[in-house]
Image 1 (cartoon, rainbow, N blue to C red):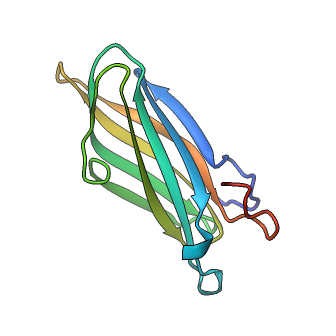
Image 2 (tube, rainbow, N blue to C red):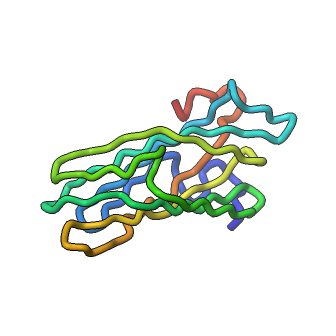
Length: 144
């Protein structure tokens, strides 16, 4: 998937609900950590995971698919998020911020969190696609 314009297939925010678990993401470009002359574009993204359902669920694993502006895909999989496997009771929310580095000024991310229920069932909570976009000169605050 090639991304040619800042307003390609996704916005810098996304939200999806799967089986009562809402995953909302907001991304922003980190100008102070980036070095475009060296092909280093740094982005932060803040994820909110809210249990809007009626049963507890625990996040066990993550699976991210990161695509840069040249169509290069990187997959990241592992246990939990930021070293935690939060268990969310109905009405609870967990939020964290992480980041990624791209070799291009635009890209997208999406994926899933594998969730576990008390009754030993599993499901994948969708992380809807969102864009990673370096603001154009004079438009640097558009994602803040």
